[in-house]
Length: 206
Image (cartoon, rainbow, N blue to C red; front, side, top):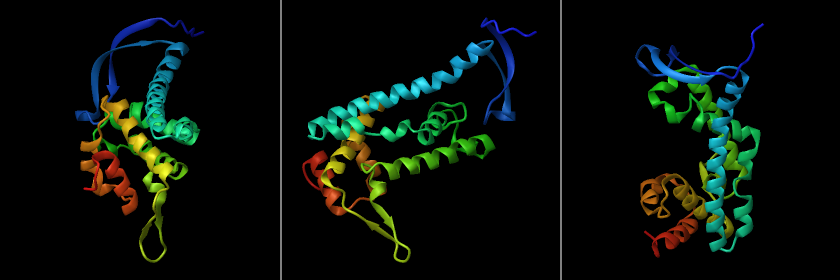
């Protein structure tokens, strides 16, 4: 009978690698044989994502406290812990076939397409569950295009805290002015909301 030993071995194997010329290559790899090794590999990506989410939530909480909305900081991004968001996010950001390990040219592979489509749906769920995302305030009308609704002040503050918190968690920098300049035209927000955001970032409207 086959017995799981948990013994670590190293060997050279032919491994399927998305996007690599020919789709296959040899590489030296060390892994744990048996159930424990599999569990460890599966759990690591979840641990990495949990570490990022908690770090991000902490930085957002600190920024929310500065704006007098501590409760918004406590409940910020709570929906990310729902299975419909958690698992697609883990696979997209830390899974073998997620965007971190694959160029856009590799998304034609069925498994990569599945990871991306699952994440797109999870990202849509997240936007529509959380009012600090500007996408929540866009109404797609049946006949006359989009209506962009002004965001209440507490959600403007949480959105700004979210941007800053993400900047610190990802780059270690609190200043998001450069990021805002690059993405300003993509961010569809009400003129009143935009004026408030730019006043906070630059001290005046751009």
